[in-house]
Length: 254
Length: 147
Image (cartoon, rainbow over all chains, first blue to last red; front, side):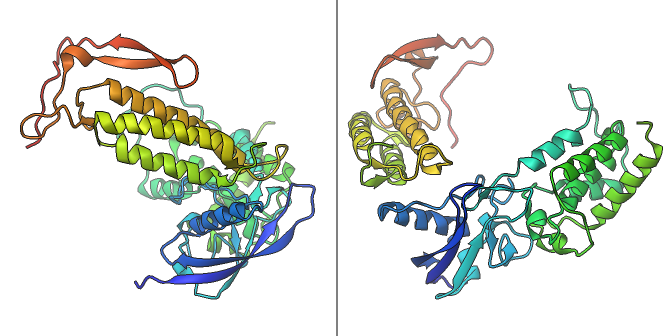
């Protein structure tokens, strides 16, 4: 692929803290290489801003390898930008042309308050995990791989659900601000495996209760979350979550 | 925060990285390491007199966070050079140019350097060495060749 440099106009959300009013600020960046990642372009812009005596833009980033789920930009109206099954850190500038204007916003959802600029507070996800996203197996040596036979389809479905990196793109994309894709991935991953059985019912009830408490909306099957998920988590998990929830609410003694 | 200098935190990190890469890299020598220590001490002075940290202290401030880490890296970088200078043997990928065999392989010196170096902070640019001896009972360290 041919390398090229580009000049861009960026419209970036600036907001001092959760209480302050935010607005879009316009920035110009020059000589951006098509080989840079989107976050590297922000590094260049921030160095330029500091040199000019201005405040840099706060944004979340960590591994920059597409596996940690920390980066979280809403680019031109799409979570993680224009590429399919891709995180912001793995979005490269060759997705854009010289002269483009790019609008960058934080994840927008009531349950994800803005901390600063493009950084939002996603601890609601941590609290959902704490409510039930764990198993109570004893620690120690792992048993022999063949000691617990697992159906190939269940193993595959669980593995696919476990690919969720908890970035929150599903919530940011959903018109209802629903966290159903995230919660369903975590519930499915454990419900499909023998290790997840002891807490199978309490898990789904507690995680859904926490999800509601955090102020996430409900699912109305628009499939937007599946389309924007960087890991391609299937909406079939939400159907499984609903079945798990129904069975658990009918059978539980609490 | 109060320094309000002219150079970004990132620029200091990059300069420190360049010194470490050039003079405390896979192959290093006494002269280079001595130069590196002086250069890092100068960099440290410059950092504490000319770094620019934007933003405020009472809000999320990624630049302040990064500045704290780079300040630590500068101290650690100096200590790494001091330790590398002290260890005159070559040890695997830590190759001292003065200590090589005739065909250019890493030359060990287990008589003098069979220890883990633990350095205790003893004030600005000063550390005390504690040697934790290594005793190999079964497998003895020996000259390796990957040829």
